[in-house]
Length: 213
Picture 1: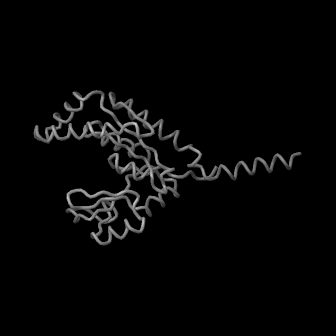
Picture 2: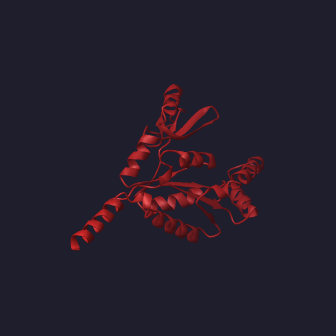
Picture 3: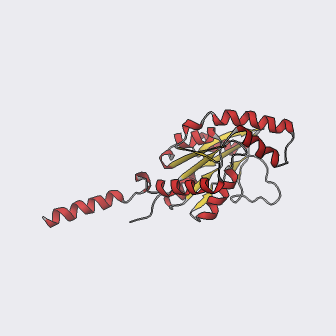
């Protein structure tokens, strides 16, 4: 059969539920999965390159791209805009490459509602308990008690959107959760919308049948 179309893999979770670790494992598992490079209006930081870490644009250029429908999703955070440019995503889909999106539930909602939404695969990662989620945040030893409390409050809001996703996994065991993610992605790659040559194959089967009669 011919080349499949790529998936837009949206993995969301509250902070501390394991999204970053699982995403890194998926990238290491299969070279056909890569991170989607976002566009932003913020200035590049030392060591960041255009088109590698981000696509850097000024505000006017970013707004123009939004108005022309060139962004699959976008949001403004602390005065700077972030979004997923449509052109490189479309190119990846057609090349059979899967893109992993680091977006929240709102970004995921915009991607699923976009013109490329039929290629989206959305997965929400839940913690085994709120107590365990807080323990993980505290064990990082990166944030103050006030910041952690804020993250816990935000987590409750994010978790409320679990039912909007195609799959929901409870990350009570990292190895098992990774295995379930691999299974989901492997199966979704065979979804009819991801196999553009199936119709041609069916036509060939019908032609062979007619010719054999």
